[in-house]
Length: 309
Image 1 (cartoon, rainbow, N blue to C red):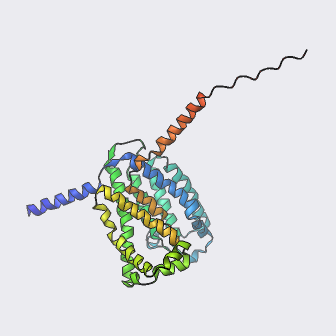
Image 2 (image 1 turned 135 degrees about the vertical axis):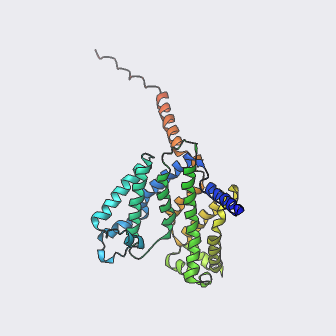
Image 3 (image 1 turned 120 degrees about the vertical axis):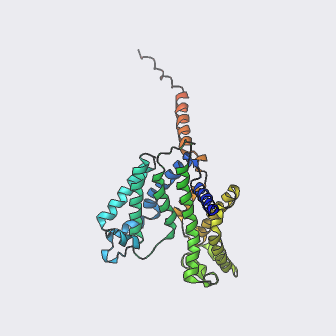
């Protein structure tokens, strides 16, 4: 019995250590800035169509389960516009790193409501799951500066949970394909229909190769089912696996124009973002520009023309 208890404790300690593996605070600071800036970009560039829900009759609103459980109000023009402007301003403020807990929780709640509004009219996108998880865990980290190399378990936990959500997006997508489509999903015409609906010229060329689309469907299922292996490979190979993840989405955008932008942002949780040091580089450029301006000698005063007698 004692041996079983000790084994359980060792397993628990190993899992806990893995979940809270320390990372530099600068990494989560860079990740946080990227995430909150994307919220603003999402509102203005990627999903501006969500604001159109303000003009849709309330009878067409079929809230998601969580919207019924809480319950959340039926969208009105006032509610939609209020959430939009509040979320935009608070996301930009949160990107500065100030008041990380208060602003972080406010952004998460507002973006969560924004997604419920977006997905309660018949279409639910699964590329938002990991991004929502990132918004939920970032406020738990507290203050983190871009130049802070202090190792933090709280920062490590936030990034690890986001990474798990990224991998769950892939694995559960494969599970859904096999659950609802069966093995026929891999041998059917899923990609062919997608190319007909929204394919590019590159996709048209690929579709002409016999059996390539079928092979691609087998490859997609294999890739999604094996995605958890990213956690067990060495750090060197992990970066290669993450690069493959990004290349998969690059091909998806280039062939059937499906963008997983929020998911791609969440996936940067695997990267050593602190090495980019965007804030420090901007400050160096600003200081360099100021020094160059000071180094330029002042122009001599214009010579006066002699007085005319």
